[in-house]
Amino acid sequence: MQYTEKVIEHFQHPRNVGEIENPDGIGHVGNPICGDVMELYIKIKDNIIVDVKFKTFGCGAAIASGSMLTELIKGKSIDEALEISNKIVVEALGGLPPKKTHCSVLAEDALKFAIDDYFKKQGKK
Amino acid sequence: MKKIYLDHNATTPVHSEVIKEMLPYYRDIYGNASSFHQFGQQARKAVEEAREKVVDFIGAKSGEIIFTSGGTEADNFAIKGVAYANQTKGKHIITSSIEHHAVLNSCKYLEKQGFRITYLPVDKYGLINPEEVKKAIEDETILISIMHANNEMGTIEPIAEVGKIAKEKGVYFHIDAVQSAGKIPVEVKELNVDLLSLSGHKVYGPKGIGVLYIRKGTKIQPLIHGGHHEKNKRAGTENVPGIIGLAKAIEIARITVKEEAIRLTNLRNRLWTSINEKIEDVFLHGHPQERLPNTLNLSFEGVEGEAIILDLDMKGIAVSTGSACTSGTLEPSHVLKAMGVNPRLAQGAIRFSLGEDNTQEEIDYVADMLSGIVSRLRGISPFYQKKESKDLYKGA
Ligand SMILES: Cc1ncc(COP(=O)(O)O)c(C=O)c1O
Ligand code: FES
Picture 1 (cartoon, rainbow over the protein chains, first blue to last red):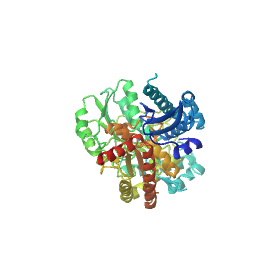
Picture 2: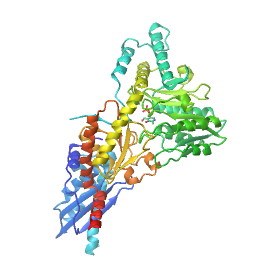
Picture 3: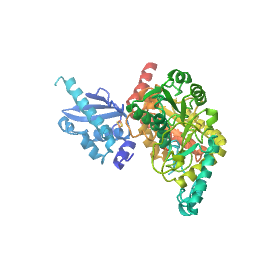
Picture 4: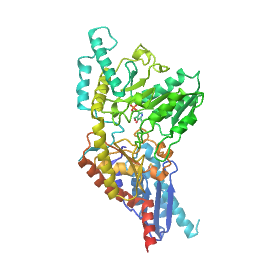
């Protein structure tokens, strides 16, 4: 598998791995084809993502995507975070093999679900 | 960095003696084996000598060996060739659900042309049941095709028993011996088979060369048309260096197979034992005993296979998930699925396939590296951690 150095680096040293106690939002998503799963936890204060953690039962690309996504959204406002698509994650990783695009989608979806969960908990949406 | 190759079921390095034997047929004896002149006749002689080596290796008779471009072509030839030549008798074929794609996709192709295929189930160890073969045979059945040993988890099928049944019922019997050849004895009379596939690159020979054994009298239709090569059964100028290389490789295998099987079994078991000691919640796939000496297929609960492979690759260790051909797809292995392995476990399956170059030192290094890798990846996994913490709460 041809992974970029950046992907390998994040795979080997993933940032923000873990769970958050009493999170403000949780996103739990699975890919029905490959069966891989990602979980994203967010802590939000004044509309800002002050903390984020992830876990994944997934391939190297999934681990790298989760790690990169958490770096990209940490400290961002919810609106800014919602702008982070899987494409941006892939670009930040210096690219992913075409077959592995869906792994970055897993990360984007986990984020969307986590923010959704946050809004639901806020009773906003 | 160390380089440790544990993927011998995908392919093997070519033996240096094999290369030595092949070289003259590129440089000096490069004639076309069909040519009349001395260049051609020398090549012809070498090809026929090589054919006799294959004959000896599997206990065939002269004239029963056809050279092909590899295991895939041999499988295609056996299945489609027998199907086309015998379709007036019937259009039913029996195979198993865990075959290599060379067999499975040949069968699927025939299905589109009106043939009916029975895909036999396997038990949790990946074994077919000969009784079920017997039950599946109809008047219309023209071929049974079962692999001798499975490439992913190494289970050895009860071929001799199926062979007996096929013989009694007068149905042609093909075995894919691509993985078994060179690892365990393969003998066509003992196994009662009519057709048998072999491949050069799995037995320390070159890639792109294989064999189909066709028992004398077997009705088969050629798939490749052209000149009068291989007794009009397979057209195309002979791959002389490939044929020479394959023959040399199996000549070596014939001598070393028994001792190497013992050595590899010990080495493989050592790997399994030390992994088991170092890592919790590991599952073995395949039959505990009836298994290729070199193959170990494992799942590490809570961890996905590709991540392990990638981590091992960074440490210079080459293993694979299931078969190399299917690792490009996202779906977990059809073999483990047929064995009823939990899908999440199947997704984490790793195949270690050992070979003649592996040493005990390498095996110990792999087990050491693996324990660190698995615990790191389990730390990232939402499944394993949860299980642990649940256990913690239980204890409290
Ligand atoms: C069981 C089995 N059959 C057939 C093949 C195909 O052989 P080849 O690579 O020579 O086409 C393989 C190799 O992957 C195999 O493992
Ligand atoms: S293959 Fe499924 S997440 Fe990468």
